[in-house]
Image (cartoon, rainbow over all chains, first blue to last red; front, side, top):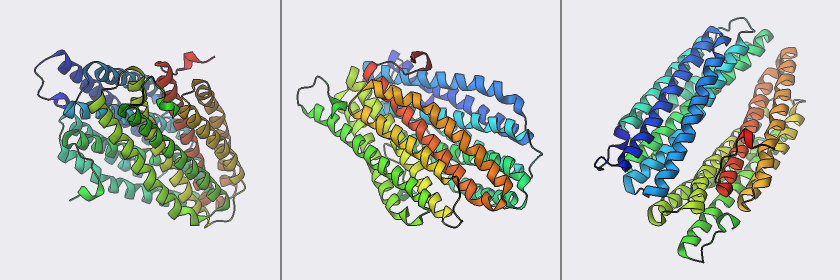
Length: 227
Length: 227
């Protein structure tokens, strides 16, 4: 794993860092799938996805506990410094963000069940488009993490504006539809919360982008640093 | 600060841990005030609170950066072990939760401005009651943190069920009102998001409770451990 591509000769220490990177990669893969399934469930108003999503959440949570255990062990036994220290701290942060993304994806999937009680809502397509952007963000930032590559991480960080813009448009249009047709209030509120959860997942993708930037460059990714 | 009440004789190391605890206490105080002001602003539908909330958020964010800097420094120069290691890791986690609480409080305050555009909504009182419980949770868990006291932390952890119950009731009633009166769709959605933000702040209070438990006992606070 490039996340742990440091100057270590193959040692037990290097292996421990590799295992940490593997845990994160597995968490990332799981939450990415969670999110794809959740959005697809919302689009199809399909409640049947719940048990699968729940099972995957258990795995994600177990991996987060594992990451925290490994990080504590590394600090206690290896006292990492410089790049390794930043990598270890970043792993802890990224695991927190990924656990939260998994949780938000679960919430989205559960709303699919609620939406199944109503007739289809026209604005679901906009949710699908917003979801596609957020999935892309998540995938790109996870790739940037595993390859320890700053440039794509910064790109993800900037793309958050597009997510916010689309989210705001969706909210505006949904509120208008709900005001005109009271039958849309129930499903509309679920759609609004799904959209909010997607917008939050975008925020977590930018958090991960910041962690990658800090891990590689030792400096924070801030507004001023933008080109 | 009891957070750093360890076996250290007064040393530079002990002072560094004290400063970390002070940062967290200051962050806690700031976000508690943020939350009180935000809820009061929603109840009074008062948009004037925005600049004050924004200024405080800048302070909270600066403190989080400071905590992270101090934690990295401690890891790099002091290689904390046992209690100190758990305390240092917990500080990092609690700072993340407090920064997020500040952010959610800011979102609540901003909704106050949106609500000012509409006539008063009856269900605002329920938001106030939900807010009062969440403020109490936050205050108690911050006290538990600064006194390194597990018992009140566990109590806060259990009280989250009450928050969830009140939140669900509020959502149900708000949806009913919005369906009956389309004039309530706009303010109703803002109230729903305020309630959701409060419920999330309750979740962060339970996260902090878990961090206190782990810091003091070295074991995680899990469902099975409940009495």
